[in-house]
Length: 397
Ligand code: AMP
Image 1 (cartoon, rainbow, N blue to C red):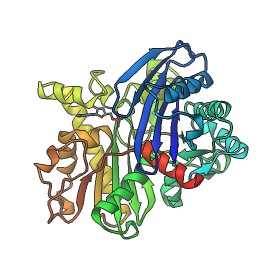
Image 2 (cartoon, rainbow, N blue to C red; image 1 turned 135 degrees about the vertical axis):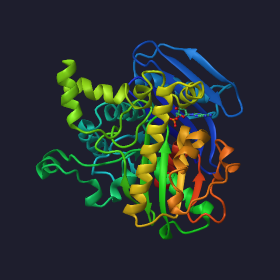
Image 3 (cartoon, rainbow, N blue to C red; image 1 turned 90 degrees about the vertical axis):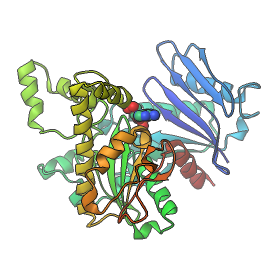
Image 4 (cartoon, helix red, strand yellow; image 1 turned 45 degrees about the vertical axis):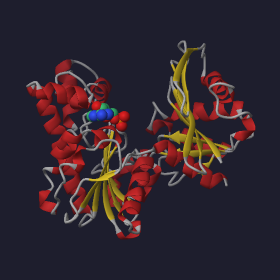
């Protein structure tokens, strides 16, 4: 089955055409600057990446360009639109309404719209992606895959905040968690690599990218995760602060004569390792280079980042009363050997021993722990698009 995976942002649209039968990517690309001017970058499997400047006044036009590229004789991957069997859409927030992926109907679209308040930057854009695809491909079945769905198994004690209950009742203020597709994919793959049933395992997944979150997956179900009502909570990230004392928001607002919204914007876009490093960079490669050259702020940023990850791992080992496997994934988790080593340096108490040679590997599945380690530590590259294609194919079949 050929599945078109769509990840639609407010001015961008990422896509991959995946053959779900043999799990191969046939073509992929990105439309950018939608509504401004427009450009499409497209790559057929085994081909060169090419970029064209195009007039893209809206997402529907962007989708029609994607289809043109997929059908193109030279750079395309299909000869007729009928070859697209289904479209899988990444949807950021499913609130409490969606605990798994669903076939998209008018009713589903309405329910996604009702979650707009919870993800005002993402859900409206995701919906535009759905509507645009329905316009261009009215007869193709579509599936919504939610970032929040995997975390819906969390018990109440893990998702409630210590706030007046009325805010949960009135506004559904609670922990939701994000990166669910990745945590789901990686935890299941970990069980496969361990040759064990996921129902017998306690796994901690560290999704460490520019955005980052940790989750506790007990017997195949998420029981806790570090992101909250929004993706701002939890770990220190590329530009996001993660956990802070909530009183800091009004404190800085008063001192700087800015609004609470502006402080939150700073917490989202100017904090994390970018902020800690004095604005040097949100990219871990830059920070590692600067730290090596003796930049004290870069060093502190990396140390503070790793310490926070280690604290969450400890918390989730406690939450599950044990842990069988710890998995690193996403850009930093898959590639940054020094960051992994720093996090693992806090984990000796769990009986973990790391094979330093194995930890030199990047971007591939590998066991970092030695065979006698009491907890397996692994790297598993995440593949959210493939996971979306898999779930889409399963539902449409
Ligand atoms: P993501 O959001 O998952 O794409 O991750 C982005 C982060 O991964 C950036 O901060 C990069 O510094 C980091 N990253 C990607 N590739 C490498 C690499 N080869 N070595 C170190 N860090 C990397």
